[in-house]
Length: 312
Image 1 (tube, rainbow, N blue to C red):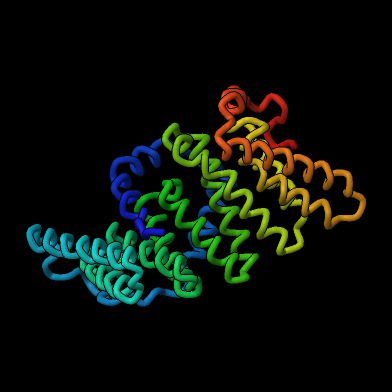
Image 2 (image 1 turned 135 degrees about the vertical axis):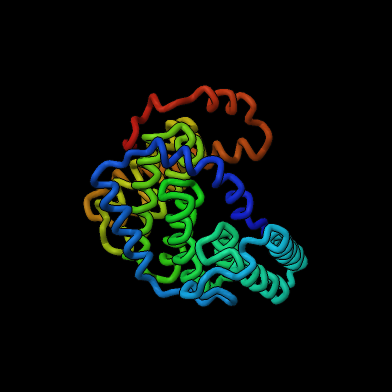
């Protein structure tokens, strides 16, 4: 797959939407405590070595020179463009070199600037796709911290950075840190969705996938009850969004079936989930074969009448 560096397109919306989103959000005391605790964790995380950036020093002397700033910004964009082209050629060494140069150019605008946050995310995405999670984690820690302060705690880009960080930690075997990160992201989603139409549009489709990841982290920690609750909520949300016969329910039903199968006395529930997975896979095969026109109409008219939110 091509490396599209979606962080760049996300950052274009920051100045437009983060201000009005933050203005409309009045988080509850519990949510604020959770977010503040996460901020403290991020702030205490090990710093990332960023070439050309030292936050202890004052901004560069030419920071107030518009023409010079424009030239640096254009150079930064060119490095990102060349990195994308190198990735498409499967030239990983060249792509990494260009991303590092983009990161260095971003340092001109300061360690908490939008170009810096974008470059940190781009670099982390590159490392994740190259299966270098250990290199991606500190970059995501720094990016999440910068975005938390600049874009705002409930901005979509901030939440995505937190989810990517938690996914990386889960892949590194840090289940407890991952579970905390997913919980933080889910709480921010809840606050944004509850307080903003913009947040609802941007974040609602993300919730089921994050719930599935959170359940996986909790299972690794032996928290089977919490994992089951997450999976059931994912089923409810997907049923509401896509209908109770959508193949998108295969993953949470399969996970529930495996969870029940691992527990004594829940064989009947496991069999029920397995039957549902089989039924949905047949529906999926009908779609793939091109003979599902009537089925598409049925699913498009479907809703959550069969399953309420959070229920199977």
